[in-house]
Length: 105
Image (cartoon, rainbow, N blue to C red):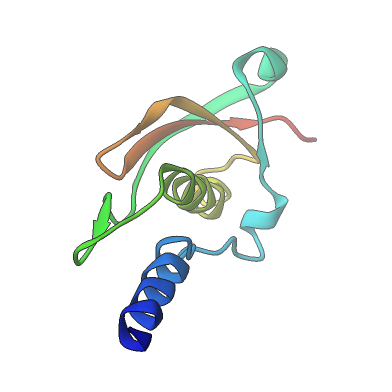
């Protein structure tokens, strides 16, 4: 009984883990929506990928996957010359695209 309780706790804690953190440069990138970037210059489109819906046999939450994809896009946006990202659609199969804008001076 104790072993199964321990295994359940381990699975639940790992399924909530976010494996991708925002980098120092990524922390300077805003996440916005299409209506808020009207005065900005679109510089690129990024497509990022993270681990899919499962890690081994454990199902990952859609919220964790979406957060990782956003973090990856923020981390890559500065290299693409932008300071703001806007998600394009919803995550699918561990992938998502983002428009990258330059909104700052």
